[in-house]
Image (cartoon, rainbow, N blue to C red):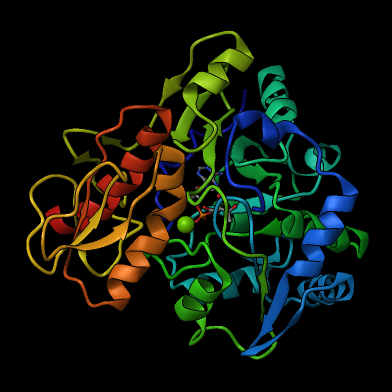
Length: 370
Ligand code: TXA
Ligand code: MG
């Protein structure tokens, strides 16, 4: 298959029902439920909040067609959306995020039916993954078509594609496509190197000074997964994981009936980073420590069963690793808003979701060890 190896993940900045089982992501969303959720969502328009009705989604899609930015919820984190075929809109994404140019962006579409607009020579195993986990928290890296320009792919011959399952995201994508759009580029809606936002308020705090009056933030509540999508490289004969997430290695292997490799850019326990790979990401202002004993005034994120030492500020008490992922970024933000200097993010549980969480913790921590 043609195409250079996908560039190592280097963005560094990395719902509606609480996560209960992976199969829910594979199920199509019922229209009735989708409608209710849109009713409940709101639109933030430079400080003005109104109900995010069908007409608000339509307006947001029209605004995107005109080249403006719209931040929107997905089941993973909030994305900063722009028309993926509009070079100047994409340039604004880089400017608003303060992200160095040349880092590829994920293109979001509403349906597998639109996949071949963006990707070609799609391997059968990739189609299997697409059918199993989309809409859902998974991004596939595929050989690109001519529609995926260099300004989206960072001049690589491949493109990242995702179909999100959050109802507001899907409705926005459908409306955008109905108005003639082909796909929305959407990196996480945070400044480069910072923590991905999992609520509309967090987007506002993060980007308010950088968005302009024609940009919008769609509010669809808290993101139910809480960490970014699993990214799978599908440009070789077999799949490999570039970024771990809620769609786990085991789930992928069960779907494909074969083992796959993981290709992260750091070694989990050794905290080694490849030079130039921007291992430091997802970072709050506070130092993040993965081990050790928190002292008076330090923050603590740990499973509920872990006690809070006297004087330590408890930031989150998740019951399990799914909840840990769901609460992590909000807990980072809370620590920063309280002016906490050190966050102890303790994760003793060893399961597949904990691998994805540790990926983010190691990167958040690596800011301090560079
Ligand atoms: O959950 C998510 O994936 C969120 C939501 C909004 O969809 N998006 C997100 O995008 O996390 P971003 O840009 O913050 O992170 C995407 C990562 C970046 O590290 C980028 O370099 C990498 O994916 N990426 C995108 N396209 C790629 C490609 N063609 N090859 C290799 N890496 C790619
Ligand atoms: Mg990001």
